[in-house]
Length: 455
Ligand code: TRP
Image (cartoon, rainbow, N blue to C red; front, side, top):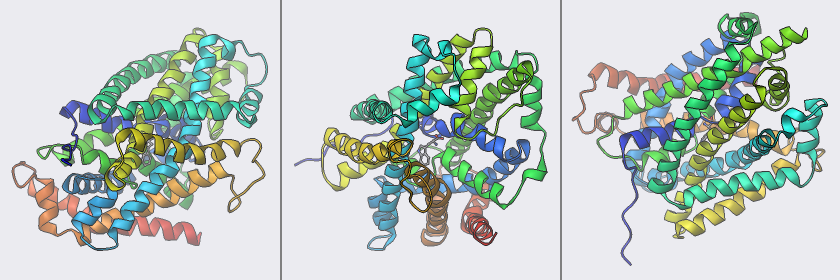
């Protein structure tokens, strides 16, 4: 049977937006603001940017480069680049890690569908009680969150079923463009509230007293998670990229977009929380944890003029961001099933849906009926969140850096980075990237880990 040629992205813009779509997600809107809030505001931002430049960006470039050179799913890519070695199992673990992330990601994706639904129907703004209770009774009920989780996963699968160009690329282009417009509108609303400037100050004036060893691991975990690196997502998307693409420039753009978006999402949320707290004479609670977006914000929208519109826009933005990321996670699993288990795209989507949906159900139930069930002292949801972001992704990044720096030959690395010498990338820059990957990234990641284990 003749094999169909492998799909590719249709245009450079489409590729950039699909990758940005993968990077920009719940990590930016839901996770970043509360992690920033917990870890000393601007001090965290500063550490985050340093980690990004010296560790995460070089790792991202390497994952991109490995993916394009291998031209396949993570498992086969490592097998092609290091034939017969154990590295292909690292590729397999990357596929598993993506499935684990998707399993808890789709639960929060489901919450955003529910909130959008309630914001549109007026139920959210019309609610008269305490939003902690609104949220709590929703996530702890047995059936409703399950239905939303599977609905979200179903929408994700539907997009992927259309393929790389017609599904992933086309939808990412539309969704990310709409997302940018919406979030700018919400930022304008948030910043124009009286007292918002206090929130801005909080974001940009550093408080170093809150910085500990944990801050560093939190910043690193957040950067890996937000850039979608360490578990084969960028690698898989990169396998659909043309050979003449400038890898370093594309990676830098995506990292820039992603960070800018996280800061913008912070500006949409934190100043509004401050302004409304000031108005009501309460303490602004920006370190509220995962509940920030789902508990604190609805109250903020309720107290501000035009809040109903802002709520619809905000939760639509949250949903769009979540979907473009979820498709990139599912595509890792789908590409693996298509290429290694030789199933059609449609079947691969169904299989991933069943697999991730199955685990997702347990993650969702861990807020309700399964609350008492603990894995290493954590609920199922927290367990998946913790082991993926704080362990699997950094370890994945570490291994990627070791592979790129020590297993690939230097000449091959530089050759791929400069597209066989046809790109005018200054030699000092190419070498700097190479040595950051070979020496700095592995050392820094290991040190941060050690520090965390010892403290
Ligand atoms: N980066 C996405 C976000 O910020 C989530 C995501 C998509 C991801 N693909 C990933 C995280 C791969 C880690 C690894 O929400």
